[in-house]
Length: 272
Image (cartoon, rainbow, N blue to C red; front, side, top):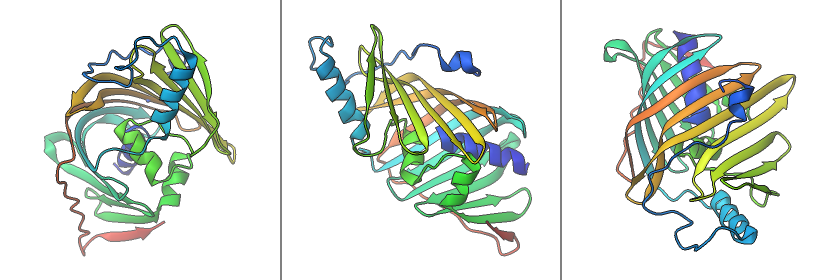
């Protein structure tokens, strides 16, 4: 069960996942249901300058919500474990990510709390709690993501380092934007008709560990002016391959959220 919890945590955080290289190269297929989009005020999208300016703004824009709640069905598989679970996510912008993993018979198996500098995991089935730094989570995922990166991935917001150089490949139906820093190559694919994100790809390699992570965003819904991808296919290939289908059944924004996290005095506490 520890491996199942860990696998679910990694997958959900990475892209809360082709299923081969072929899938990683497929075209954007998201068919968003949108009431408004960045392209609304454009009579055409033939201008490369307009396209580049608009997408640069999207990539560098700050998160425009205060809280997020999501309930999703997760079907996952990896070398360590496979199965399904219900995942609950509470997010407070720039502050906390709270995750509860519930298995069959609606029994909660794990609870996770991530802050700017720490990761805490309660394993209710084993009666243990693991306390670690955000750097330990980076080691697990093999991606040098900070809290903001994980937050953006859960919200489906593409982002790169501030003032990072962007390269654009404008195709008839899609636009591919690439960037890189010292650790990660970023690839984002947008639908040209409305600039909705269809795919995020992260490629990284360090200390002999390679990772190629893909997220495909589908079934966009508009919630009070916020476009949200309710269905996501996630694939991680490389040193630790994983797959996930994540289907959100409930979600809302900017509503009060709670972050209950109490470690029983009878639990064994581990520090990483």
